[in-house]
Length: 323
Figure 1 (cartoon, one colour):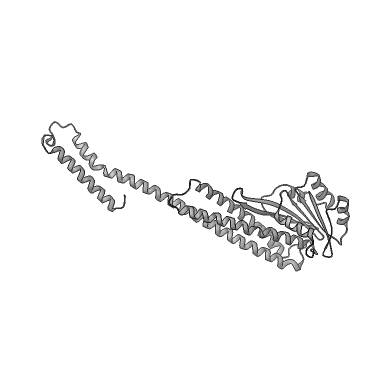
Figure 2 (cartoon, helix red, strand yellow):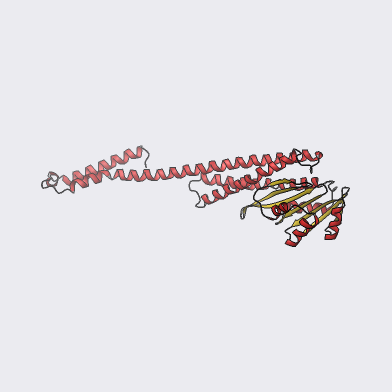
């Protein structure tokens, strides 16, 4: 689906134009054009990206093909960016949605396969025209990136809540049988988040330094603010990941301790049976003459020696803490 918005002098003057009208607006340098490709068809992709804007084939290829990492490329008269929005819920876990942007002097084109809250919010604001419309496509790009980055905060909150549950679970006397699976899922989620935040921060850092001619100097402080937000998110993600690794180490130490306790208990049981085995083995030997068998107190003495030695062994092991 193709959504289009036309701005002039800070006002919304048109939206959702036909293709021929879009070509005319594209040729008018006094207007600002925003075209949003929301899960477009192959024909719509070809018409907009190749026909109306005539983007470079490599940029179109990077736009259409899914990319795991954010990136930025400077072309002669526009800037191409690959960014990722994040989402998280307890059922579907961590998920990302790619958002591609083409930023020119008088236009911005966004491309995404799935619905994005940031894009939907900006479209609703533009349609209502409740505030002054942006006077430049770089302002639109900043607002869009700002809304997208703001959605990182609830994702971090959800991941932190999951991490706290894992920390509580690892300290319980008996951990859940699904603990290891939850631990590995959480570690994968944090790794994906860090994999996205760091390159995205580098992209915003490049824009905040003014390296691109498509960003006006008046907007550089706003992009620096976005960079600072991403730095905070990256630091938080790194800290949560370290806490997760600490929980994993505690779980491994706890499992090793429980295994040692079991081995110690079995060893204690073996030690208790030593007196019985020694006495029983002695009386089980085939000697021709055994004075103990001829004595009327032979069996009573053997039982007494066995009982006393077993009791002494138990008391000794009990004082050592093996029981």
